[in-house]
Length: 591
Image 1 (cartoon, helix red, strand yellow):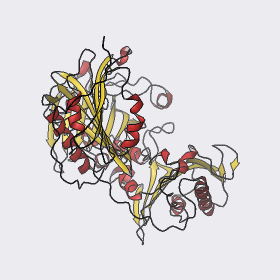
Image 2: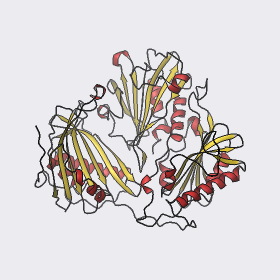
Image 3: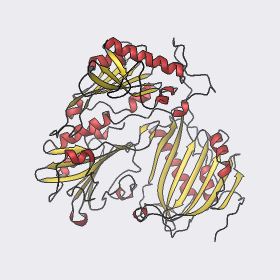
Image 4: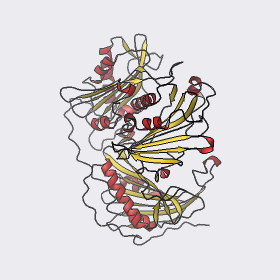
């Protein structure tokens, strides 16, 4: 039986690196993530010389299997990375987090530093005066049979945290992935990584001086939320004098907008009025208004206007005198949104983004079945000068900024790009695309978008998945594709006949043809040089688990023919799947 003890260990197993040169990368940028990745990988391999890169039960690869992303808020960008490694034959998962708000975290976690499962824990001072906290623990849990391949019933974990003098906190966690294994790494080896001077965040740039504002309310207050409500109401009434707010679809009239998540309007840097219902005459709609203080980032991180296929017809960018830029989109209908409708067409819903000359952005999203307002009227509303952010509150003021940075909205424009690309890849037959599931949504926007889809044409049928990643874990090849995180590519067969090539545009292409249990699965990856990646996988056996099953109930069951069966091959050829994965509006969807 293991008994918890508190110990104090001496110097780290491996000495920290020499002082790192001055950091010049922009926090959260790809170059910054590459810099930190390289420092983390170097520190790990110095501290644990026997470390190799491998996913659970998969062959060792030469390329580090390390995925990372920017986390935190726009004014305090941090870092998070994770990788699958093997040490002395034991498969492990390693996670590293760096946050700028270290002092708060350090104090909040003090009471739980040594949990009941700890077999070793303690604190010490690092070589540069860092406060160091470490722990090694063993935990056991009952795991339902269906999750036993993903979650061990017994886990050994070690972690080390270092609070540096500049207030940043680094935490490295390593854990086993199989119940039978013991952790082959000492906490001293983890400490060597978190005190490594090269593993550090880039300094945040000096804030841009706030533009002069005539607004007298303060952002994040109820008074300012009321000001924005009144401004939007006036803008709507100027476009439609018989406009009125409603309490809900089919509800009573209301003097003010009634939206979901009302506290979202109290966000200091990105207030949002979400899905407020209105009526013009006998036609109803819903409007979402978001203002973003860092408008340049919001503009650049949003999906760009499609360049080809159906969606490109409905998206325009206009530049106005004075520096304002406006992006106007007419969104597409979903597949099968009406009985007998198998192809997408333009809808009556609009998304307007106005990037103002002061760097702020106004985002107006209007959904309506029959047009209560036109595109031109919606554009005029988005350009309304009274829809402007208030000054930030003085430092230290207690506001509702806890509601966090804006969560970038991808359901409309991103779904349209994927819809149109699939429509172009399969111009005949029936196609169906499900709403996406998204990955983490940090200061750089979504890290992953995923769409399940089905195609039926020419007596063939199959379902699959389209995955778009902003930054894949590794450079893909036939040798490394099997090391991709299984949680992201669940049920995808990445073994089979594999070919790889590089296109004239520099993008890598990896194609895999698998034949598991009598089915045929095509998997195609296209990857940009910066590791932005698209995977398209499709099989010839819908609803059999060959690739990614579609649901058989709900909306899908009403819209799709019953008893869909596949044929000898997937309904798209390997060339069509490759063209879909390489479609410019997919490969550039997450810039």
